[in-house]
Image (cartoon, helix red, strand yellow):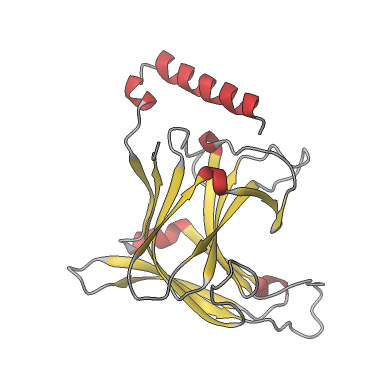
Length: 228
Protein backbone atom coordinates (compact mmCIF):
# COMPACT_ATOMS: atom_id res chain seq x y z
CA UNK A 1 0.00 0.00 0.00
CA UNK A 2 1.33 3.46 -0.85
CA UNK A 3 1.91 5.86 2.03
CA UNK A 4 -0.84 8.13 0.66
CA UNK A 5 -3.34 5.29 0.52
CA UNK A 6 -2.36 4.18 4.04
CA UNK A 7 -2.91 7.69 5.43
CA UNK A 8 -6.19 8.02 3.55
CA UNK A 9 -7.42 4.68 4.91
CA UNK A 10 -6.49 5.63 8.47
CA UNK A 11 -8.29 8.96 8.08
CA UNK A 12 -11.43 7.28 6.75
CA UNK A 13 -11.40 4.75 9.60
CA UNK A 14 -11.09 7.52 12.19
CA UNK A 15 -13.91 9.50 10.56
CA UNK A 16 -16.23 6.49 10.64
CA UNK A 17 -15.54 5.99 14.35
CA UNK A 18 -16.30 9.63 15.14
CA UNK A 19 -19.54 9.55 13.14
CA UNK A 20 -20.53 6.35 14.95
CA UNK A 21 -19.96 8.04 18.29
CA UNK A 22 -17.10 5.71 19.31
CA UNK A 23 -14.71 8.40 20.52
CA UNK A 24 -12.90 5.94 22.81
CA UNK A 25 -11.96 3.84 19.76
CA UNK A 26 -9.71 6.68 18.60
CA UNK A 27 -7.42 5.98 21.57
CA UNK A 28 -7.37 2.18 21.96
CA UNK A 29 -5.74 0.51 24.97
CA UNK A 30 -1.96 0.09 24.81
CA UNK A 31 -2.30 -3.65 24.22
CA UNK A 32 -4.91 -6.02 22.85
CA UNK A 33 -5.11 -9.80 23.02
CA UNK A 34 -5.48 -11.41 19.61
CA UNK A 35 -5.03 -15.05 20.70
CA UNK A 36 -4.78 -16.56 24.18
CA UNK A 37 -3.87 -20.24 24.46
CA UNK A 38 -5.14 -20.73 28.02
CA UNK A 39 -8.09 -22.91 27.00
CA UNK A 40 -8.63 -25.93 24.76
CA UNK A 41 -11.38 -23.93 23.06
CA UNK A 42 -8.57 -22.03 21.33
CA UNK A 43 -7.84 -25.10 19.19
CA UNK A 44 -11.08 -24.42 17.29
CA UNK A 45 -9.54 -21.23 15.92
CA UNK A 46 -6.58 -22.92 14.19
CA UNK A 47 -5.77 -25.48 11.54
CA UNK A 48 -2.46 -27.14 10.70
CA UNK A 49 -0.66 -27.48 7.39
CA UNK A 50 2.60 -29.01 6.19
CA UNK A 51 4.40 -30.25 3.10
CA UNK A 52 2.55 -33.57 3.58
CA UNK A 53 -0.32 -31.98 1.63
CA UNK A 54 1.97 -31.92 -1.41
CA UNK A 55 3.82 -35.21 -1.08
CA UNK A 56 6.22 -34.32 1.73
CA UNK A 57 6.72 -36.22 4.98
CA UNK A 58 6.73 -33.46 7.60
CA UNK A 59 4.13 -33.57 10.38
CA UNK A 60 2.73 -31.14 12.94
CA UNK A 61 0.44 -31.03 15.97
CA UNK A 62 -1.12 -28.30 18.10
CA UNK A 63 -2.14 -29.07 21.68
CA UNK A 64 -3.15 -27.18 24.80
CA UNK A 65 -1.14 -28.43 27.78
CA UNK A 66 -1.15 -27.61 31.48
CA UNK A 67 1.95 -25.86 32.74
CA UNK A 68 1.62 -27.15 36.30
CA UNK A 69 1.58 -23.56 37.52
CA UNK A 70 -1.78 -22.75 39.11
CA UNK A 71 -3.65 -24.71 36.46
CA UNK A 72 -2.60 -22.43 33.60
CA UNK A 73 -2.32 -23.80 30.07
CA UNK A 74 -0.36 -22.91 26.94
CA UNK A 75 -0.36 -23.94 23.30
CA UNK A 76 2.30 -26.39 22.10
CA UNK A 77 3.08 -26.40 18.38
CA UNK A 78 5.33 -29.37 17.62
CA UNK A 79 6.21 -31.94 15.00
CA UNK A 80 8.92 -33.18 12.68
CA UNK A 81 10.50 -31.52 9.65
CA UNK A 82 11.51 -33.83 6.81
CA UNK A 83 13.22 -33.04 3.53
CA UNK A 84 12.02 -36.32 2.00
CA UNK A 85 9.24 -36.57 -0.56
CA UNK A 86 6.96 -39.52 -1.30
CA UNK A 87 8.10 -41.27 -4.46
CA UNK A 88 5.66 -40.95 -7.32
CA UNK A 89 3.86 -37.95 -5.82
CA UNK A 90 1.74 -36.04 -8.33
CA UNK A 91 3.04 -32.78 -6.85
CA UNK A 92 6.22 -31.36 -8.32
CA UNK A 93 7.58 -29.94 -5.06
CA UNK A 94 10.54 -27.58 -5.29
CA UNK A 95 11.17 -27.69 -1.54
CA UNK A 96 9.90 -29.58 1.48
CA UNK A 97 10.48 -29.39 5.21
CA UNK A 98 7.82 -26.96 6.44
CA UNK A 99 4.91 -26.95 8.91
CA UNK A 100 2.57 -24.27 10.16
CA UNK A 101 -0.44 -23.39 12.28
CA UNK A 102 -2.83 -20.89 10.73
CA UNK A 103 -5.79 -19.20 12.33
CA UNK A 104 -9.16 -19.70 10.75
CA UNK A 105 -10.46 -16.58 9.04
CA UNK A 106 -11.86 -14.00 11.40
CA UNK A 107 -15.52 -13.11 11.23
CA UNK A 108 -14.88 -10.01 9.17
CA UNK A 109 -11.64 -8.20 9.95
CA UNK A 110 -9.51 -7.39 12.98
CA UNK A 111 -8.75 -3.68 13.04
CA UNK A 112 -5.27 -3.08 14.47
CA UNK A 113 -4.95 0.38 12.97
CA UNK A 114 -4.14 1.87 16.40
CA UNK A 115 -1.22 -0.51 17.02
CA UNK A 116 2.32 -0.76 15.65
CA UNK A 117 3.73 -4.02 17.06
CA UNK A 118 2.84 -7.72 17.30
CA UNK A 119 4.04 -9.50 20.46
CA UNK A 120 4.27 -13.26 20.98
CA UNK A 121 5.06 -14.93 24.31
CA UNK A 122 7.05 -18.03 23.38
CA UNK A 123 9.26 -20.76 24.81
CA UNK A 124 11.21 -22.42 22.04
CA UNK A 125 13.83 -24.83 20.83
CA UNK A 126 16.37 -22.51 19.23
CA UNK A 127 14.76 -22.62 15.79
CA UNK A 128 13.68 -19.63 13.75
CA UNK A 129 9.92 -19.38 13.23
CA UNK A 130 7.92 -17.23 10.83
CA UNK A 131 5.12 -14.94 11.99
CA UNK A 132 2.63 -14.21 9.21
CA UNK A 133 -0.18 -11.66 9.03
CA UNK A 134 -2.86 -12.09 6.36
CA UNK A 135 -4.73 -9.07 5.09
CA UNK A 136 -7.55 -8.51 2.64
CA UNK A 137 -6.51 -9.28 -0.92
CA UNK A 138 -5.80 -6.21 -3.02
CA UNK A 139 -2.18 -6.80 -4.09
CA UNK A 140 -2.84 -9.98 -6.10
CA UNK A 141 -4.68 -10.16 -9.39
CA UNK A 142 -8.48 -9.70 -9.33
CA UNK A 143 -10.34 -12.98 -8.94
CA UNK A 144 -7.66 -14.67 -6.83
CA UNK A 145 -8.81 -16.01 -3.48
CA UNK A 146 -5.43 -15.84 -1.74
CA UNK A 147 -5.06 -13.32 1.05
CA UNK A 148 -2.08 -11.00 1.02
CA UNK A 149 0.63 -12.24 3.38
CA UNK A 150 3.23 -10.32 5.36
CA UNK A 151 6.02 -12.21 7.11
CA UNK A 152 8.75 -11.67 9.71
CA UNK A 153 11.26 -14.03 11.32
CA UNK A 154 11.00 -14.89 15.02
CA UNK A 155 14.14 -16.43 16.52
CA UNK A 156 13.23 -18.20 19.77
CA UNK A 157 16.15 -18.91 22.16
CA UNK A 158 16.56 -22.39 23.61
CA UNK A 159 16.97 -21.63 27.31
CA UNK A 160 13.72 -22.95 28.85
CA UNK A 161 12.59 -19.42 29.68
CA UNK A 162 9.62 -17.53 28.33
CA UNK A 163 10.58 -14.99 25.68
CA UNK A 164 8.41 -12.12 24.46
CA UNK A 165 9.15 -11.38 20.82
CA UNK A 166 8.08 -7.87 19.77
CA UNK A 167 7.85 -7.36 16.02
CA UNK A 168 7.08 -3.89 14.62
CA UNK A 169 4.50 -4.06 11.84
CA UNK A 170 7.02 -2.27 9.63
CA UNK A 171 9.25 -5.37 9.81
CA UNK A 172 6.65 -7.57 8.12
CA UNK A 173 7.62 -7.97 4.47
CA UNK A 174 5.02 -8.60 1.73
CA UNK A 175 5.32 -12.14 0.39
CA UNK A 176 3.68 -14.39 -2.15
CA UNK A 177 3.91 -18.17 -1.65
CA UNK A 178 6.92 -17.75 0.62
CA UNK A 179 8.86 -15.35 -1.59
CA UNK A 180 9.37 -11.68 -0.75
CA UNK A 181 7.67 -9.26 -3.15
CA UNK A 182 10.31 -6.80 -4.31
CA UNK A 183 8.17 -3.69 -4.23
CA UNK A 184 7.43 -0.82 -1.84
CA UNK A 185 4.14 -1.64 -0.14
CA UNK A 186 2.60 -0.97 3.25
CA UNK A 187 0.27 -3.24 5.18
CA UNK A 188 -3.24 -2.06 5.99
CA UNK A 189 -3.55 -3.12 9.67
CA UNK A 190 -7.26 -2.28 9.66
CA UNK A 191 -8.04 -5.24 7.37
CA UNK A 192 -6.38 -8.25 9.01
CA UNK A 193 -8.12 -11.55 8.25
CA UNK A 194 -5.81 -14.06 9.96
CA UNK A 195 -2.37 -14.99 11.28
CA UNK A 196 -0.03 -17.97 11.30
CA UNK A 197 3.15 -19.31 12.88
CA UNK A 198 5.31 -21.63 10.79
CA UNK A 199 8.75 -23.23 10.66
CA UNK A 200 11.05 -24.33 7.83
CA UNK A 201 13.86 -26.86 7.97
CA UNK A 202 16.08 -24.49 6.00
CA UNK A 203 16.63 -20.74 6.04
CA UNK A 204 15.98 -18.33 8.89
CA UNK A 205 18.31 -16.04 10.78
CA UNK A 206 22.04 -16.77 11.26
CA UNK A 207 22.81 -18.76 14.39
CA UNK A 208 19.36 -20.32 14.74
CA UNK A 209 18.93 -24.09 14.77
CA UNK A 210 18.04 -25.45 11.34
CA UNK A 211 17.79 -28.67 9.37
CA UNK A 212 15.36 -31.60 9.45
CA UNK A 213 14.24 -33.07 12.76
CA UNK A 214 11.86 -32.39 15.62
CA UNK A 215 10.60 -28.94 16.56
CA UNK A 216 8.56 -27.58 19.46
CA UNK A 217 7.52 -24.10 20.49
CA UNK A 218 5.15 -23.18 23.32
CA UNK A 219 2.81 -20.23 22.76
CA UNK A 220 1.15 -18.43 25.67
CA UNK A 221 -0.46 -15.52 23.81
CA UNK A 222 -0.28 -13.22 20.81
CA UNK A 223 -1.02 -9.51 21.32
CA UNK A 224 -1.06 -6.23 19.47
CA UNK A 225 0.89 -3.43 21.17
CA UNK A 226 1.07 0.32 20.79
CA UNK A 227 4.73 1.16 21.43
CA UNK A 228 4.82 4.71 20.09
